[in-house]
Length: 238
Image (tube, rainbow, N blue to C red; front, side, top):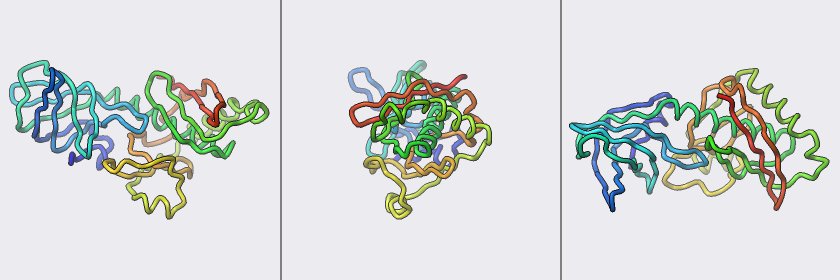
């Protein structure tokens, strides 16, 4: 199992670690460490990128993935050849900050949509290219009339009051006992956490900002309802 450094300390962007395995198949290389600051892609959030440096080598991490509790750092060596031993891993902090803002922005939209329509989020895509949140259920034309404006107003209110975003470790049984809506199966190889935004709780293993005030510039682009789902597309000004 790979220790996920960002869980214990969300602001940690680099760490010393031990490189245990170098995997190279058909020119595709990945490194396995005992602990990592890299967020592995999942939950609608893209992975971190960055570098891993060791004795005589620098390895560029282009993607991180989680497989059966082990994080694989996929990329290419830009200097020397990676070998097992002590290393220092460091993520691209600007990329992490953007992804955290986009992900928390999606949770604010989940919260506001539930308040205004009662619809529950079942899918989130928080990549910089075309982020959206998808909800279970459709809205007729009357229900959608003016919804973008009302949704944007509620989002602006939540950003303005600058309330803390709470991220807590939990378990599936605790989530169920608390009546928290679980949109799907929580992967067994991922830690279970719950994110609370303005009283709305949602299971989530991703990275987030500390306060809603950090989401100035969050804008609703469009709302589309069909085939039993409602999708809210959004964007985030830099």
